[in-house]
Image (tube, rainbow, N blue to C red):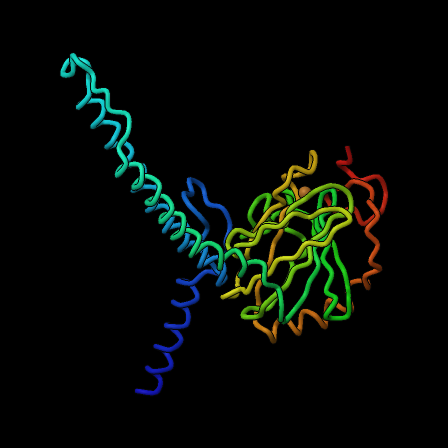
Length: 288
Ligand SMILES: [Cu+2]
């Protein structure tokens, strides 16, 4: 009886957990203020740094406003028929030079190490490559057999339950959690930009040049981003959908992907313009 009850409770707890914890999905929210929830070590630091800056800016703004109000009231024409002729005050001039220097030093003390950390792609566990195209992303997995696939936005009428409009893609960039992932970013036609807000990454995709960024994803879930460089009429329709999974799930996905997808040929010449997937290879439905 006790054992049965224990099992029943366990089962109920599992169901409650499943209901209470929907699959993590990071995407923009209506009326959102501030950043998306951070889900990588770098984005956590960016979030903290942003909050620090906010306090500093808040304090400066209040101080300047108070000074203005004081000057307006204290030196108003009515109360000062004979205006003061003071033009210099050594103490104040030293203060308004030294205090801003200290403020900038404090900001630099926190911001410069973070800036270098975002750029430090050394010792990555996994490297993937993202290629911006008009208007979709191609991904390559050079460490896992060098297969490649394209990821197109899911059209509104094809969205499955849970897939966000303008953000879901037909193939996800599947990556393992807890690994340092280096992303090589380039483009085959015009400037694009690879941006994932919840992971704190944003880097330009430039034809003829390879940029790099990195992130480590803390938890499994879906992380949505978008091309963040005006790249033509399909700019808003080339989202980035990262599916973060456990290492075992990632290995299983890789095995499957190696069979499903073609090997990369490294060809970066511009392709015909395409917004939705067109497997037939004929004129794309919404080519401009
Ligand atoms: Cu783009």
